[in-house]
Image (cartoon, rainbow, N blue to C red):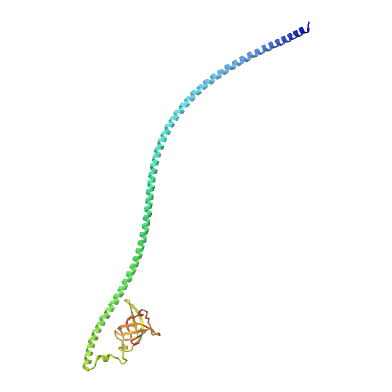
Length: 288
């Protein structure tokens, strides 16, 4: 047998062995494949059953979901109605609020005007109170002045009554003196004596020299009156005039005209440039 034939036979045997091994392996694998196919079929059946169950459950879930969705839609529709009603109510409330706001704005404006009016009224009241207080003060002043004027009127009335009594008395005295003077003049003329010769005192003056001092000074009815230390015992008579001079300096102060006479004193009215400044102690003289 040639080597080639041996090689060929060897290869043939090897290939046959490999074929047998392959067949055995194939057969074994085919059986395994059949077992796997059967198992896969069973699993597929179970899977299909599970799928069907899942589909049924899904369908049931979908039905439940649809029911829930419909219920939710109904609830949503109800809520929409409530929302619309609430919006309508809100709109009504907004309109009410807007109306209230407008009224409040008008009320605030009116309150502001009332506040301004109140402020103006208070200012006017304050001015009125000030005016009333001023009028009260003026009234008190007027009442005080009236009281003083009444007192002054009473004083002037009393002084006027005194002066009037003195005037009447002076008129009576003057009338009596004129009558007496007329009688004396007639008698003197019958005796051959002229009255003018008797009127001249020995010193050549019209009145005798009489000196005294002022004892007291009073203001009566706006005039200055004084009491002097000489009277009828010193030949002082009503109507006689004294010169008033300041003691020590001899300064002329005014004149005193006698209006009332007593034995040791007399009183009269002071006139002259400095009559208001005459004080007790000043000298009075009929002749300077």
